[in-house]
Length: 329
Image (cartoon, rainbow, N blue to C red):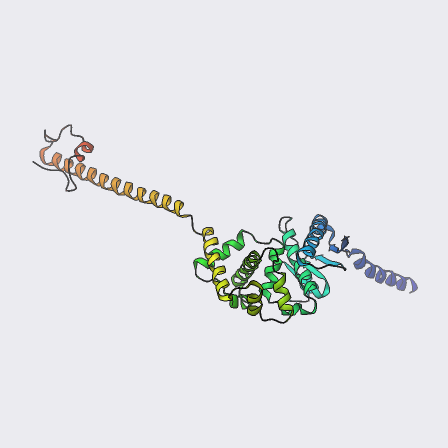
């Protein structure tokens, strides 16, 4: 009996130890202000995140005029469930990165080495922007937060240009007042909101390159309404700036979906030339068929070709006859 109890005890002990032994631990890479937590098979991605993330933090400190004293944790996950757990949210499947500034945490899904650096810089920008604003971080609208993050990370690619171009072509560009609610729309609306937010921040930054977007953040932190803050910082009527920005989107990005005028004219010329050639060939073929039918009728009626038609070249004959067909003398 004691031997049976011993076997039961050993079996239970092994059952308890086996899962723990089989569990993998995240690997950790660190720098002065960054800690990257990744799974063993993500070693190369983890090292890339540590290196490019550290560079992004240095750049963001300088751009936003803020110093990071603590450390940001970057988690690279394996699954959607893990992504949701670490962010504390039920995320839509197409969301691949999320920043939690209050927790000094960034969570990203695994991706290619070309895509990771700008995405990580984008999410770190959210953390640094909240650090810059402090207790007033809540006053920033979503479009400004996302626009600054994309601008700071230089996160604007061909897909962004394409979505703006298509909206411009369909006359569906978002106005300043439509930007914020668009982030709660469908995937296409959200993509357009992100792209236009970047474009608006870039436009505002170019108005006063020496000061950038910082003075606008200061005005908002003091409790100014967005339109009032824009007018005070840039010294121009907001409707005028908005119209200029939207017109710039139409003229700058339509080439993404429409060819330049010269190329369009060349293309149209080729199409017209093709149509003319097609019509000429069809008419020529019709004349030849008509002549051949006439000759066949002559053979049936006379038993042979009439002397005046023998040796005639149908193609040459066509050169002197009009559209009414062969002339019978």
